[in-house]
Image 1 (tube, helix red, strand yellow):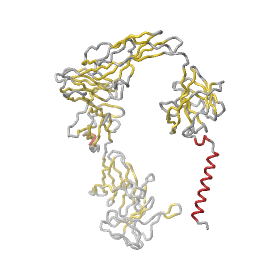
Image 2: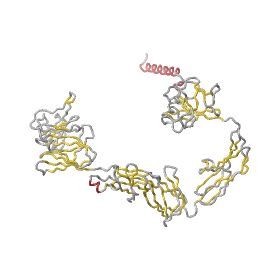
Image 3: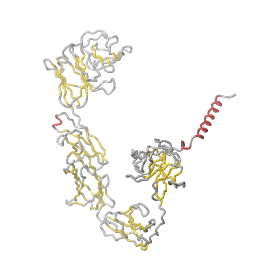
Image 4: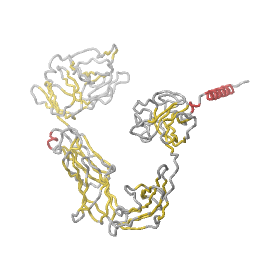
Amino acid sequence: MQTKSTSYGKKLLALMLSLLMLVSVLPVSAWAAADAKPEKITLVGSSDALEYEFVDYLTFAWEDIPHYKVTVPAGTKTVQLYGTVYLDKASSSGSGYTQKDGLNDWPAPVDYWSADEVGSSAPYTIETRTGGYEKNLSLVKTRSYADTSSAYILEFVEKDDSPAAPAPVLTADLSTTAVTYTCGDRANALAVQATGSGTLSYQWQVSTTSAADGFEDITDATQSSYTPSTEAPGSFWYRVVVTNTVAGNKPTSVTSAVAPVTVNVPEGMRQVKIITSQGRGTGMTLTLKDAAGQPVSIPADTSGDYNVYEFLTAPGVYTYEARDTVRGSEYLLGTGTLTVTEGSGEQTFELYLVYVYAIEIGWTADDFTTEVKAADGTVMTPGEPHQSGSYVGYPYLMAPGTYTWSVQPSEARAAEGYQASQPTSQKLTGSATWSVTLPQIVSTGFVVPKGGRVVMHSIPSTTYGQGTLIPGDADLTGDDSDVYTFRLAAGSSYIYQAAGDGLVTATGMFKSTGATTRYDLTKTMTGNPKAILRDEESDAADIRLNGVDYTGSVALTVGGMKQLRPCVCSRSPTATPPAAEAPRWSPCSTTRHWMWTAPMWSAWMTAAASPPTAPVRPSFW
């Protein structure tokens, strides 16, 4: 008897066998996505395969593509690829061809080995073309024009078949005995002597790592002798590469022995390094003076992202000053002191430039001030404020650490309602800009007929939600009108509702402009008290009804469907929740008013001081 589990096992086995059969008939290229390689590469007119070897994987179009190095005779301009290959057109702005330094650029910036058309053939000829990037690379796809998952990259390296020139012979080599100097000493020259059958050339190299690696060529050191520099302290290893060049032969080189040289700091001196920002104008310059006011020479290396000053000096307190020329004017960016302590190692200081500013177009340094405090409470001193970019900023030159900063408006700007920013804690690790938009609070008044009321809300943050109630001041001393004044944030939008017994209800949404404003609603609210006026450009979520002795229900129909849903709103602080079977109500503010909410509209109704449990017979105000 066959059980259910046995039947299931046989079905699973059959499925596995089917998959194995499917795999066996799939072409090899379908499984070669990560390991695609050339089928065969030859010179044009030859059937002999060229040698190639796998180097590494290069990333292009988010794919890791195998990279092969192909050796070709010197002067080779064309090769032939066998198998199915797809290459992009040479006229496609380099699209599809790539280089080692920027494989994910688009279009990929390679112009070298390319095809004159898209397609495939066997063999398929590709040729070099000149351009700005000479990397000798070609991206070859083995499936389709747009598919790089089964591609490989070829790098072509010319093979020099000419015989090698005889190696030069060093008749006098470098000494491997360590030599020690003090900074500022005159070092003895290092020299070699060599003979050769052709022209001899020399290239001196230095390493600051070890005698075995890290060697780099020394600029303009191409003679048989070289005098080491003693300007900077440290451990150095020197050697020279001697090359013999003979016409018709490949050059041959030999390398000398390694000569170790140590340069020490003078007694009573300290090696100092200062790392600073480069500035935003023509370039920040740093000057240093000792306690007697004498300048200290500090050569600068400006080749990197930051300026680096390295020099020798005695322990003591030094005063620094940083300046920069921005937009044609020179400004003081910062001053301070550095204390160089006694010791044998290098002492490093970091001073980074920070601009602190208010994001306000057209403001000058007269419109605001800034304050920056260090973690210990020390108030930092800014440099001269100036425009850097679109805004005027106060420059600070400070060491890495945690600071608290803020921006304060001037007296004149404070009178316009601008408020100081809240203190912000910031960790400084490099050049930075710290900026803030100062809040502006302005008074906005609404004039309504005597007995009218104005309620102000912020824009709701969620759909069908209710904004925050904005407190206001009421001036009820007028004979014919009342004034409600609200302090509103400039640039923010608000919803207002104005209503009163026997008055037309007015509601709308507006944006505070930043200037003291007064809205006169006395004429708007005078007329038929049954009317509801709504700003046509408003997205106000609340509309308040008024009137007298209406009996019935309130409904809003949109697209043939009733959209007004009973939700809630009692302004009575003593209101209690309704019974479970009653329509849903929720409290608001101000006594004896209720709200029914809908997706875009709501109605305020006068009713009893407690939530209704039966259909409401409201009288609209």
